[in-house]
Image 1 (cartoon, rainbow, N blue to C red):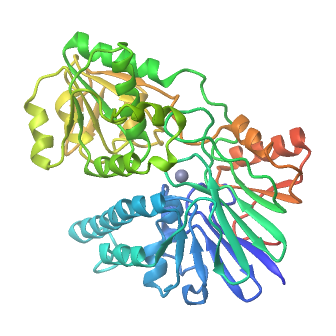
Image 2: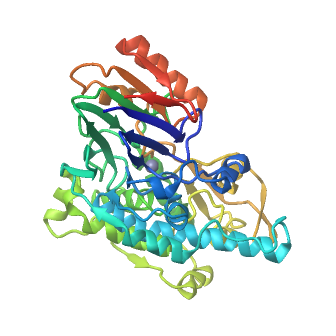
Image 3: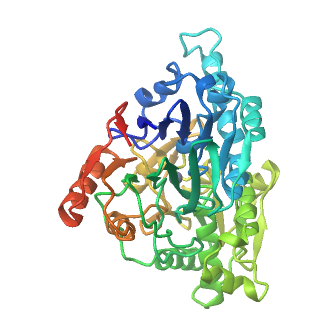
Length: 460
Ligand SMILES: [Zn+2]
């Protein structure tokens, strides 16, 4: 049987929009269905005609829940895809939070364009609606890690742990005796909460991500910078504001705060999780104990709640959140968005940035042009919520948190293959990162490897 693979997104120097079309005989399976994010030229690709007729697609297999891997699904289904979507159970639970949120953002964007007449379309319409996102969830089938399934009759498929975020899998597809392995996003070794990436023994064709294919993560312990920030807040009797992504980073930060309290490294300050999505994601992380690593299981064994610092408050409503503006520190507020582009962190920054007792700790990647990047680079004043806010707070940065394997960790994972794949395609990385990883794979492992090109079709 002939089998081909076409790279429809997350290739050719692009990190977002992950979509790879597997064609086995007459059957078609889409691996990932991601939204293009970031620069406008990329986002416009979400509006182009679908790269394939959704009605001709047999199934979708999702590596994990992140929107750059799942966020085009509502549009695909609206445009006629009615087939099954396969992912792990925890990925489905996260999709229930992330897809409606993505739809809500699309609706807000359209509403903004209509109010300010910034679109050439009248009226401007959202890429998809909350109802479209809800419909996707009815098409999902949950699959356990290691459980074999057939998205289409001639393709046997299973997930191994990728260690990236809860539910994230490496996808193996067996087609007529040939193995296609798609890494999805790869996590790290020896980090808290997540299990290490599973070794995958065999592939004929391998797709490997390369987000940090040209980098080696800082060997600093992320807890040290966090502890320093908490101690400063305690000494100054001020607030520590931590902008954090709701899925993954919020849980890591809460886990580390609790751990630092337990070891007596930091005082126990009041901690507010001020993020509805962060609260939901934390509950999902806590409930999927089958995916917890050994450290987390040890913490839980004596009944400790791993993501709950001692003086912990869930700030659910807008009123709960606003009340913190009238509350004096010391204390810690963990809120979204991670790059201070929106969300509840904004009104806390507006209120507390002018106060020199305040500490802000960035714990994730800050993209160019975001408020997070500006603050990280030392901006003395910053615009938000219609005003210019002077920055007198201490800004701190921890670069040691990451959900992605770096170059050495990717190579370590590749070392798990018992023999080299006939061909390795590098996906999901900016051009520099993807080519650096290709060079490392060809140079150090002696494997045949190439950077996948956008739209390229290859034979399996
Ligand atoms: Zn991801």
